[in-house]
Image 1 (cartoon, rainbow, N blue to C red):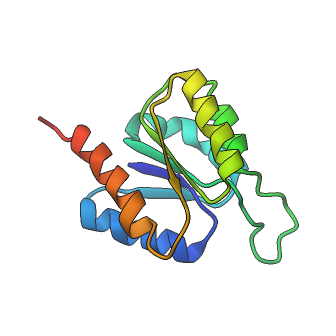
Image 2 (cartoon, one colour):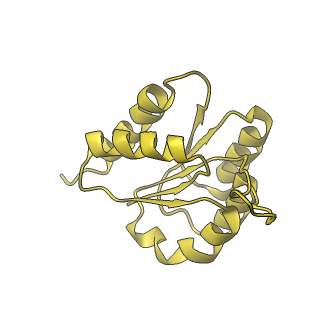
Image 3 (cartoon, helix red, strand yellow):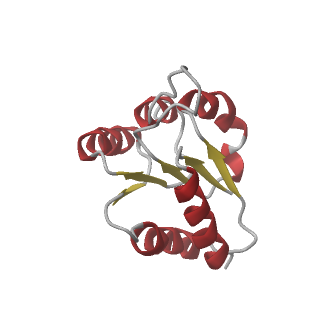
Length: 139
């Protein structure tokens, strides 16, 4: 299972398409806000082979609730023992550096994919996910 924090519906479709091309059996579980992910993720961690986190999140349409950020999820995950690699996918370079540093200090294996350009999901994100899947493939 790949666990993801992402608020953009179009990107979620693109992530899902790429993942199906890499492994049609692999389930993508997406949260659109940090608080839901923090509440629910711990029970799914034993099934996770990768966690992919965005940083900047927009409130859902017609919602006044703060969706939190990838930094909120990072702080939570850093309190847990490392389970699987984490991929930080955001265009917010400053906050991605914070997230990467927190995962480094907590001992989590981590990667960064700047969300820049038109095909970063299909090229850069896909390349790292493929590498992680190959490393975790049954021998």
